[in-house]
Length: 473
Image (cartoon, rainbow, N blue to C red; front, side, top):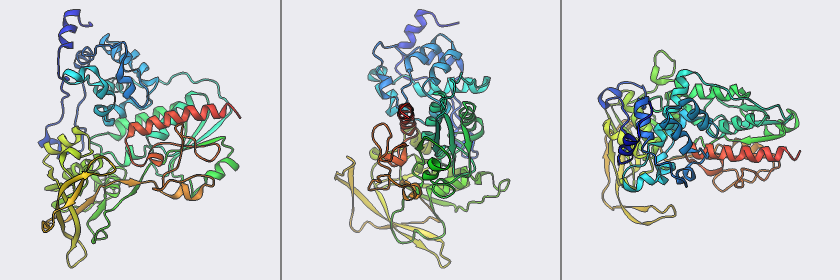
């Protein structure tokens, strides 16, 4: 039964979100099971009733994929969960993914009027509730319009590519999605750990939904090597191509010792663990060598993922090493909170200058220098300045570098007519159109490394632009 008016009034006075139950930190560092359990129906309805149903709902402005947030929350208030998931999926093809990894606190929830006097409505948790409700009962495929006769190639099956593919298929176009790896999902599969995004239970089900819309998914195809973008047009008969290959090329510090055994890029570390399932070794064939003490350089979400993964793989002591203070850490507050709960040690205002080697070429330590904050740099954050004479040595045997990624240069180098930016990104306009006719791009390949939801928004925007372009042919 929906709540009565008096109950709703009381809930709307609540200043804090309803907490989401999760695994105990002492237990979860021993497994790769998902940390938060999600809302049950009763809690979801109560949290939904904190929503004021504003007439001029600002929360929608903060959603890169344009979800009608008040509408799906109203469905939860009225316990119309089937209607709620349909409303949500009118705009979002990957709600179970977004409900888990989207930074709602800096997007939709940051616009919520409830946040002015307390905590905003838990929009992300409610999104996850509806998505999990649908996964439990069975995912429905919407009606697809008649085929237009136009063919679109999607390059990359990460969040941008999956979103563009799903939207274009629902517009009636024939869509073929090409993925270089043997499994789909891009960064969702190789970058985000199982304890944040379960692969079979959640991600694969979302990918299966995209396929059910009529998208033909082809794995183990490296565009730029197996077949080029030029050949997709000239030999395969595609009318448009969307490039959503992300930013999978790791960046390094440029300090002595980065080539030692025991140094990983976060990209390799997480790919071996997630995509190649090193966390299930020896059931799976991929090992990963860790020592008792691990240092992770960086403080973004990827760094938190690497640090928390290292704990679960058996490291006894894991350090985050970051050259700025806690105020500048780019990771989500929830990820930092979980890392601290699990025992990750934060070494702030600390910068590596050299990785030290033993006689066998393995890491035996990391020399660092203490930093202080100076004037803001071009990012707007305070610039870290070394403190002379403050060098010291970390006694660690494994180092994971998690300071960012760049686009892979393969497609830019093998595709004629594309303007390339200074950092190797593909130049595209606000609609995703590149300098080559019929070629569109979006996500990290255009912006550099950013968030899953921003990549999805770029995929959605590009899909509309591709649809308009195809109508002119």
